[in-house]
Image (cartoon, rainbow over the protein chains, first blue to last red):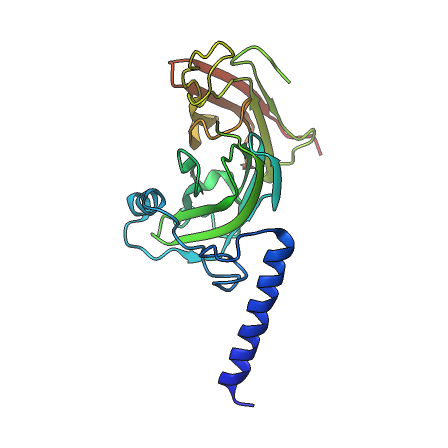
Length: 167
Length: 112
């Protein structure tokens, strides 16, 4: 079997699994950027609207936002959108000449998409931050970090929200 | 859970060794009102939330957080810190109505 047909079969299997998974989970099958349907697990979710696009552009300009080095842990399903736990961790260096200077938490469909910015110095050592946030509805959450060297890395997770926590 | 606005608590590990990577846990009582809700009588509840947190270790500012009303009521935050010297750790929370709240805890090493 040629690599390309193997690839397309794998792709078909992945899409079918995604479709079934979406049915089982009650997700919108056609949602662009849906992890199982439109992209691989390492691809960033699609930018859903102009507000998120602007929030990213304002902070990172035209720099590439690469996926990796950032772990964003949140529940896959949050019953109460008023209190959703968040843990952000990174294995990026925190040395005097190269460190993560900013961590940005962006919730795609919140009234204020840029929920928090955490500005750091090497004094914090290995990066770990946790807090609790409000979420309006089911959507993607982005944790994007910026290093002193100008690199931008991100981790993403999708959270299903039952009760609107933003009014 | 503290319940007077601005009442804050910092929790450190019971034992800290010099140079250890620790987690600092801090909570402050604050309504974190978004401005989107109304009272039962229909009056709007104005936005009232912590928008800045600074963390000073000894005489050095080690981190600064910029928050919105998207952080949950009674904001809780846990962050890492490299405990490389004995010094006070002071958190200062500021809100959008000019409120300033401060709490300190001493980083001290356990005798070997």
